[in-house]
Amino acid sequence: MVLATGTAPQLPSIDGLDQVPYWTNRDAVKAERAPGSLVVLGGGPVGSELAQVFTRFGTRVTLVQHGDRLLPKEEPEAGEVVADVFRREGIDVRFGVRATAVAAEGDGVRLELDDGSAVPAERLLVATGRRPNLAGIGLDSVGLDDGGRSVPVDDHMRVADGLWAVGDITGHGPFTHVATYQAGIAVADITGKEPRAAEYAAENWVTFTDPEVGRVGMTEQEARDAGLVVRVGRTDVPSTSRGYVHGPGNDGFLKLVADGERDVLVGATSVGPRGGEVLSMLTLAVHAQVPLERLRSMIYAFPTFHRGVLAAVDDLDG
Image 1 (spheres, rainbow, N blue to C red):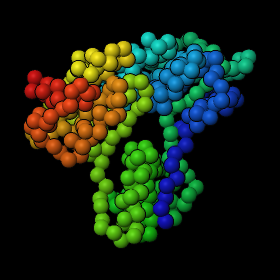
Image 2 (image 1 turned 90 degrees about the vertical axis):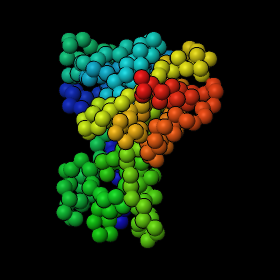
Image 3 (image 1 turned 60 degrees about the vertical axis):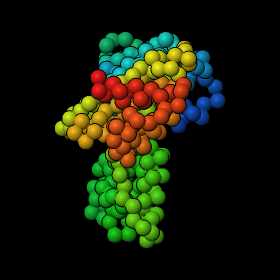
Image 4 (image 1 turned 180 degrees about the horizontal axis):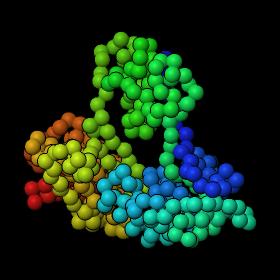
């Protein structure tokens, strides 16, 4: 048996939320008409992506984030770049506030915030995270906690004899590509093929805002918290040849995080046009533990966005 039950929206505790209509991400992508106004609750990947989508369809958008930046799991600079772009596009981005109540108002809703302000809107999109679908599937029958946040698996995705789990419920990256990767490992184990152990050092993902935010491995802070001797290299996309040619819409940067003792990358962030595609070579570098000297000695096509990686590698020595 293979468990792959995925996740469901994690709803915040807000007075009146159960009394008004609201969207989750799945409702938002089914919309046949862009609302005149939208308030987005949550500044993670889903909230950020959909806030920009609806803005570009002509909706007046307010994004409410209780933290101090967008995309809080990314490098702080990434959230700053995206927030700056959002504001230029007309999105009302509000940090450091929490929703306390919501009520119907006319044909829409009115969201009350803990700073005393309120946001009226035609639609409310709740994008405050997701929770694993684990309740009621019988985990206690194999000695596991029904109320846990994830299902513990080994590096072959085994939970217990005859039981495997893949996807969001394993506690690793909640992404389709991670679930697909894990499924391949589980299938190989189940069918007796050559075993392949799961590796997550080069786990990667992309937030599809414009600019895109691609990330692999550790952030700078995560590397420092792990006790590594950290070296950081950075270049801004507008200062690269392709970024300059691209012109408007070239917001972004490349940031590399290296283990100074092993002289290899342990993480990287690629923000900018095609940021997710530039991430591919950085993912390979982290996964294969490519020595920094090999990255310095490569030929980088001109003019490409990925050529900025060379400038960031050179900055590691700065």
